[in-house]
Amino acid sequence: MRNGFTEKLRQSAIELGEFSVNDLAHKIPVYTYKDKHKIIRVLGVLKRQGEIASIRMGHYRYQEKKKPLSQQAKIWRAIRIKEYFTRRDIVKLSGASDVYVRRYLNFLKGEGFIEHISGWGYKDALYRLTDPATAPLEKPLFNSNRKAKQERR
Amino acid sequence: MKDKIIMTDNMGDFEGMVENLTLKPERQDRIGLVYGRWGSGKTTTMEWHYANNSCFYVRAMAAWSRSVTMMVEDILRSYRVEARGRFKQDIRELVRAAKKQRLPLFIDEADRVVRKSLLIETVRDIHDLAKIPIILIGQENIINLLQRRDLGQVFSRITEIVEFRELSAQDIQRIAKELCDLECDLKVASFIKTITLGDFRLANALFTRAENLCGLNKLSEITITIAKEAASALPGPNEDRKGIERKDFVTNENLSATG
Image (cartoon, rainbow over the protein chains, first blue to last red):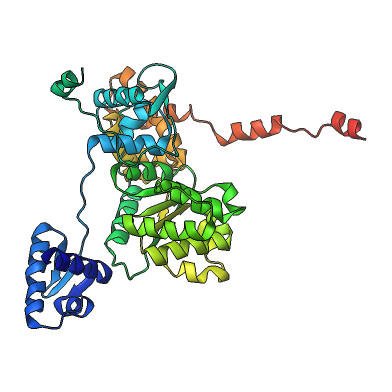
């Protein structure tokens, strides 16, 4: 029940953008003082979690919590946008090290997500995404731990 | 030269624009426009942003002007939703998918979208119904195309505009420092800016040569002499003209052959 109220409040906050407690009470809607106090309590929690920021006294703004992308996700997204690429392109776009990019590319090649077309080395080896239309949005998970490798074997 | 992307003034403006659009409340209009000359770094900035942030990207095709269905299918594909091949259902599915993700959608080569009112009106519908930020990226003339009288309702929804200008002297100094580890005087940076017309690709070629020259002469700063020497390797406007003259196909022989 509590989750339901928080979700309602979140949706209203997203739609309003900038708001006061009264605006939220109208939007949800809320008719009793008890529920209004509940709004203030939930606002406090969301503020602590970083979803809501206080602009000035009694006025708030909704700000989406941004999760930073992982290194693998960055590499995968760089591959998806380039479609044809060299290791150098991916290092430039993702900011990851060449060693990490090479290991991840080898994993993707093994799984059949990418193909090696021509050339060798950092600047000249050209790869391509095997099927851009069906390449998954989420990164293919690669566990570089030695333990995981041994388990796979 | 190091393999990394330098945050230029244009990139800073671009990031600021996307941030502003994302932070705006959903009830406000959230269409952004990015335009600029070729070689100003629009596509590189877009690729870098896509790789490092959660968003969706679609490149407009010339064939979109023939069928709106193709545009809807391509955008759906970018959301990894399979199109059913029925326009009405696909549009509804697209709005649902965009609403669910609530992430900005970038449309590259948007000049092609803007030229046909049905396409840009569909984009407007997606923006209004799904309430997501949409960023159009195009060439210089996109702004003129959008100011057409019949597209007033679209132009009024554009709340953030970024123009990609040529590189500034400060950008050139920053590039020299971060990519080549070389100092560059403001006077020299201005000279490089004039020579390369602020084009990123030409500046890149010049810096590669300047870095080699500095390495040979064991210098840690790009001097005006080095910059002039490096600039001599760049293709000049006279060479282009020669190329055009060489391809002069209308000769007396051709004329006599055709009668």
